[in-house]
Length: 157
Image 1 (cartoon, one colour):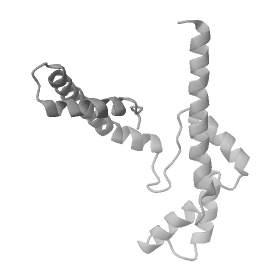
Image 2 (image 1 turned 45 degrees about the vertical axis):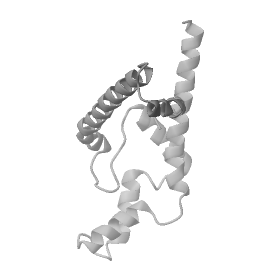
Image 3 (image 1 turned 180 degrees about the horizontal axis):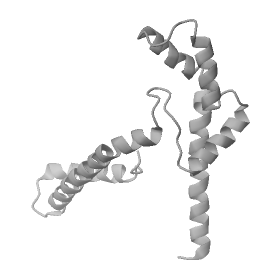
Image 4 (image 1 turned 30 degrees about the horizontal axis):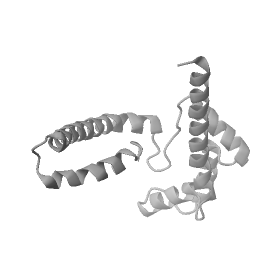
């Protein structure tokens, strides 16, 4: 493995991360509908948490706090800088730190990943051994073509 190969792969990785982060930033901005701040405040109003008259002032305060009052290009630069520092901000829904939410759910995610990997490894090993066994039933030969098709699908899908 040469240094050129590593540099090229790191460059592709950074390009893909930048593209995904950009899509993640711009898609919600392009979506029609109402402002997420107003939506969260309307939900709080229905629960009796915010008076209807004060909602305009509170929405203005939240826009300033989240930086939504700035131009789109400036929001984008701030977003990319925060992403580079792994600072994902505050959730519009629960008003808690996104990093805390991720850390709270991470053990369950890792547990699910480990369990599914273990089940896939065991099932694949047993099925592969049965298909490769010369005295295996004929119907198991039908698993060969789907196995090749599924092996072509990237693991992240």
